[in-house]
Each structure stands twice: as C-alpha cells, then as structure tokens.
Image (cartoon, rainbow, N blue to C red; front, top):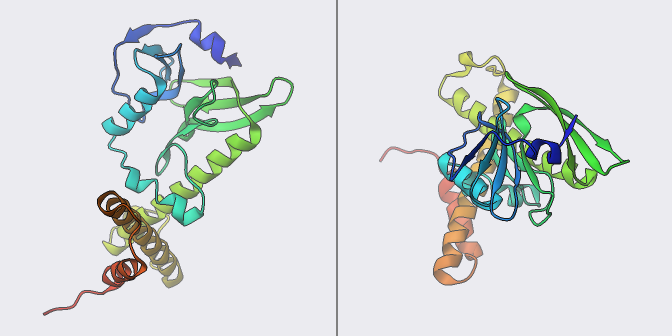
Length: 235
C-alpha cells in the first residue's frame, strides 16, 4: 500500500497540458498550488502544469461530458451528483472540492476499498490490465461513501436508458441482459422517460433563468411535458 505522498515523490514526466481519456488515468490530485498530479493506468507518474480544477474541466471537454447528462440527477435524486459520470465511467472526488486532500479517482477500476480509522484514510484497491495496487487517501468515510453511491445511482439510470434504446431499436440480441419480457421492457421505458423528462426540463429551465432571470412557469413546464409525452401521429 502506498500513500499519496509516496506517489508524488516519483515523477516520470511533466507536461504543460494533457488530453486525458477515460482509459488513461487512475487518479488526479493537487500538486502544489497550480499543478496536477496524475497516476496513469500504466503506472506512469505525470505532472500537468495546470490546476486540478483546470485539469478536471479539460478532461470533461476532451471527453465531451455534457453537464446536461449529469446535473439533472440533482432533481431526480433530490441531491447533487458530484464528479463526472458516463455509465460505467465515473471520475469521482473523494471529498468536497475545497478539501486540500481532494483526489479524483476512476471508480471503474476500483475493485474495493476499506476505511483505516487509525490514520483517517481510505485504502483504495485498483485493478486494470497494467496495475494491481492499493493507495491510501485521506478522506471521510461517510462523505466518500455518499459520493460513490450518488454516482452509482446516476450510472444505473444512464445504463438503463442505453438498454431501453437498444430494446426500442431491436438491438437487444446484442446485449445478454435484455429480453423481450414485457415487465422488463416497461420498467426500462419508465426509467428512460423519467430521465429524459428531467433532463429536458433542466436544460430549458437553465436557459429560461439566463434569458429571463427566473425559473420557468409551471404552465410552461406542463406544456413541455405534454409535448414530450405526445405520441407520433400522421397528418
């Protein structure tokens, strides 16, 4: 098991910026005030000459992670979803964004974790094609669990939406998890409709607040839902 201090003690490469992909990085952390430490999935220790916040924003832009696929989760679950979530891909913070010990980690490669009460750390066990390692990160157990649970809930909704569209487009034979069972199909449809309604209402409401300085009226919200739920008709 290694600590973050031990990882940062060995740097293999320093770059002004880096286009990081989902498969590239295992975790990101502060490196001084305006640099980011990145542990790559192949074990490389990288330093990027931009702040952690800038690195996370650059990651989202490069991987086309739209906020409209994440932020509506706050409405759906009655609490905000932190981190970047795209199905099984989840780049999540270990704590609040102002915590000096903040680390972003790739939950997709997380095999398991255990809280270490003696040191106030969480030991994360990562496994991929190149690494099998354990890293101790300072974090509060309750906060860590909550952030991971919220992201997993959103991930489940996103994957259900994908499965539903595969079912609608007769692509279910490519996915062993799907069947033509009526009950299963109905559950997927209900989840898909709920998410799509929540997402569109969030997008329109954000634009409405920008243009008019207030949230959209209930009448407008009701009309949007009516249009979304209207079935196709020939004219």
